[in-house]
Length: 527
Image (cartoon, rainbow, N blue to C red; front, side, top):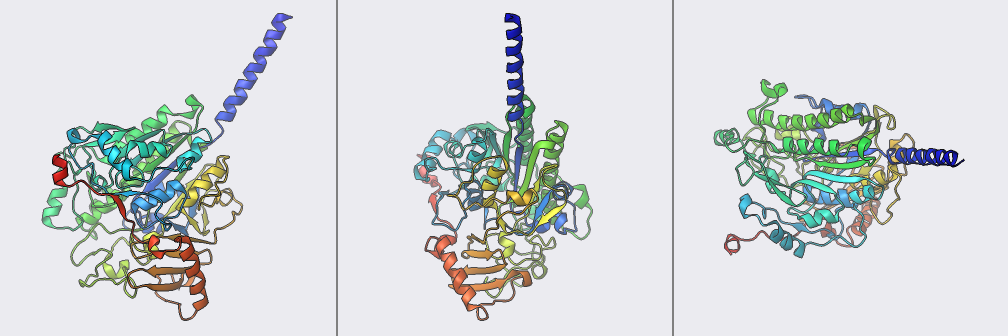
């Protein structure tokens, strides 16, 4: 009888353990790949004709592509918006610490001292504040981020930890991200030297082409390990060490690449571009930066497949802001401020277009403007969601979404709550084949002032220096060429009121942010 009871108990315990194990392993892993300055026109599934991006295209072919997606105007507010679930036109809720504080030799870096300076002037995370990683941790995930870390131009281990990352590896300083051969990076607060990389500025180059700048780019002295390859090595190792088949715990990885942010720098030119007679050398190298990122997407996808994790992993690919042109060449391509004839855009009557300003790649996909501007080319980004067997392959959505919507979308997908205090609005039902409630509008800041776009396609932008509002109707005006203020004055009035409310009563909140932490001067450094 005792033996019989013991057998029954063992069976019950075993059954309970199996059920618990199954329960633990059902939640999908998540990988969010975040590109830097990736205009959607740089991708072959949006028509790029000079090279292909097969691995990113595969996410679209096997998942869902969103066509009406907004990021922010540049890197720091975009990252803050993404992980906080809030838009970036509010009264500044984040501390934009100025970059460059880590621009020293490794033996002169005192992480504890710099962290105290940064944390002293930075707005701390609010009590019980929820971030993107929090959403995952609340549902039992281990969280990690790689690459261009966090939202300030200089951050600290304490700030990163306060945003609920269990593991982090990469740069603490966005200014150092302008080079691709870092002599050191940080892993969970510890400085990790990268052997073979000797440049204090991480081997930064120049965006304007010249014989001298070409020579500097290709002087590989002290440039042994390319940062993207270092990030990928660590990311794959993290997947191996946190394989849910072994740990019974899903993971959430935020892979924040530097690519294809300029200045242009690559270890070698991709074979697909190398012999193209229609491209200059710096253009071939810039295209290669996109190809390297595409290869990174492929490495993650293939590694998941090899481990048998692809079936239950969500892969998201998006970017922080619109296109930038890091291939400045006299008579060939100029940046978003200058015309080819030397004149300047006024961002009211004149603005950047690829076809009139020499951007051979048409990286903003035919839209007006570049990074930092409120034109569509400055704030529209690519977005793809892949989840094998759950998100229908080859589907597209024209629903209006913003990257700060990812927070509540992920939470709903993995069984979490809806964080109503956030600006984030879930579109998980759209991903799974039904229809989510659409947001009525989205707003964003820019260097020239804030903008608002409605789900119907009305757009109002505010140019803060000239105090000008401009109304457009995007479904019939993709290039933003026809100002409709006089024809629809009531629509201007309506959207102006909403925009002012979203900017917390001051439209200047939707402009360029202020910085709360100045880089110590040379004199201060000596002390």
